[in-house]
Length: 470
Image (cartoon, rainbow, N blue to C red; front, top):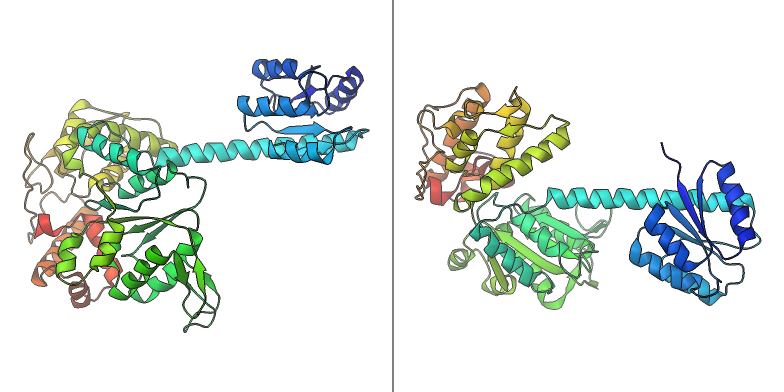
């Protein structure tokens, strides 16, 4: 393991020699520079892990040098030597990013504590940078199709503003990725991104989740809870499946958007919040308004910038790129050997309808990466539906664009394993019950005796849609 490299920038040779002895005795690698320009050259040449910089130097002083260091590497830790410095200098150095000060005359112990602290700062900054890059990779939007480019152009225009955005599209198309991209490219990028799945939270708890509650405000409220809108203050809140909010919750969300303030359950005090809202739904909210299920005034508040995220079947050219992306991610996450997808296998995946969209594709690639024995995923490794075996309900011939009616047969052709048989049977059962109840989610959930949130999860899992399965 290489020794940490410490750069000392000081015009006094005696100070540099003293610090050299202290650092080399503790097995650090020492690099010295007698001026600001020499120090900047050493940073470019030697890539130090930490800089110790004198404030008072002739020519380019320490503060000027620090400002230039920040331009070269904003994450490089810098400690200032402030023997003759003033409080004003110290405050300015702190604003420029210095993490500590060593006062002259200094002791060995003081120098070594500062160096250890600075190296820890660098390690934390490096970890944060790697985590940020990993997160960006996880939420990267992959593809080059015309349909996707249209979305990205809308995102580019919407991101720098504070305007409310409504994301429309089927389940699994990547609306969350679009929401995170808007946040990441907005002036609020350094603040929190709070996600709320309005369909997954029971109706009796959603107000508490969104707006918070005071201790004792209802049975079970043993502690005060900060709501999602408060947590997102100065940042972005993403209201996923917004069409599933009750009329009472819709009225409160409308007030937040109008007044920029929230009121916790059990409290009469209002709290100001500065929140950008991104909403998403796979429902037709204009139709929901006509049925009296969604407030017209809230719809217009949310629908300032509508962005339609296309289903995967409308961007088939992106499938090979998405497959490669998910294959790399799966290999990294599960410590697997990289695998290549045979061109014929990719053709089969491009023909498939992908009712579950990106989510279904990602899960399929992950399964293939784990379960395929060889280094190449071939067409025979694909599930029967993707190969087009038998009465597949998912595949369609090249060039076909019309939706295929979903089948709800008593048998399950193509179910090669017990798990596949159970999944196919459960899907057929749910489609049958939804048809019997006019695709009313709440009524169907009551009939089959399952929570509404659980039914929504099942619909998402199996890619069940009225426009496809109705």
